[in-house]
Length: 381
Image (cartoon, rainbow, N blue to C red; front, side, top):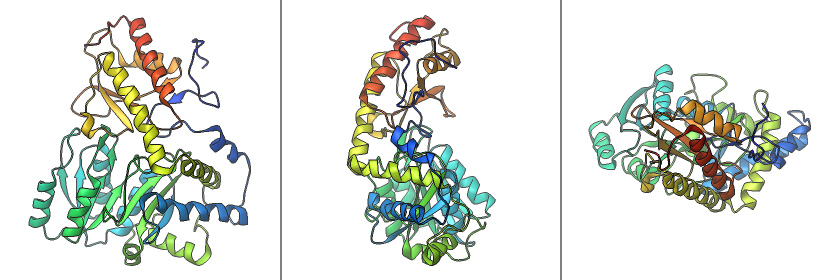
């Protein structure tokens, strides 16, 4: 529906700006390459796909010891493939939870009939490293550790490298869901002692949805044959088929992959992780500073806040109605996210995607205008 606001914000293709953790606003150049058709065995497509798979490990210092295994589907497909392919039937996973995506991993393991131990902290609290070590000392049967790099339930940054040091010390296989952080936040696969890292096309590389991938340590993948609980999510079989034929076992999302290739080239042109992460950090600072000036309180202290998505407490003013707030912002060209916390009323605003500081400034200005329209005084209470 066309906006009634003449100054409505828009992307290069005239769409509202997605201030969400993915899908997100993508560049016109990333979308334009999808207008062509290729066969799944076409030489041009196979070359593009190969370049994508070969370059992804560069982002996490994994070129020497890691291989990219793509998974047709969203990010959760990749996480499920990682857990059900790399955890053997007799394995036991320490699942670190401080949000919805840790809980989702636990559910995946339950359905796959894989044993787990849960260490859960509140949504605004990272796991305590001493407590993790205590669990590892007490529970000798634990074989794997799973954590979420940036838990977008709150936007919290979890200490993935420090957890990895404990995994190394106690000889555990270490699995990381880096879905909303991959390419934006520093992650060194070797220094983190990671065995597998799951991510997807439609997050910080700024592609479109439809392709997940798992960067697997070659030695870890080599012993995973026969673990998988499904055919389509079998990472070992998928990787073996690529090694043998260079092709997918089943129909790949060709247009998504070609688009992802374009996004990946633009990612490296921006300076890789430091460049992309730097832009997001600047976006986040503008957003947080501006919203705080309006009286909004962030859930997290700056020390725990990743520049991916920011959670704000809902104002207590009775005139503030979130649906009205959401709709008015969307009418101005800014799409935000409702809260996902179990402990507090909140909403979330993302700062990733093809967005810049001026877009964050525009979003804050739109928030100010909407508050005035709703009759909510500033600073909000």
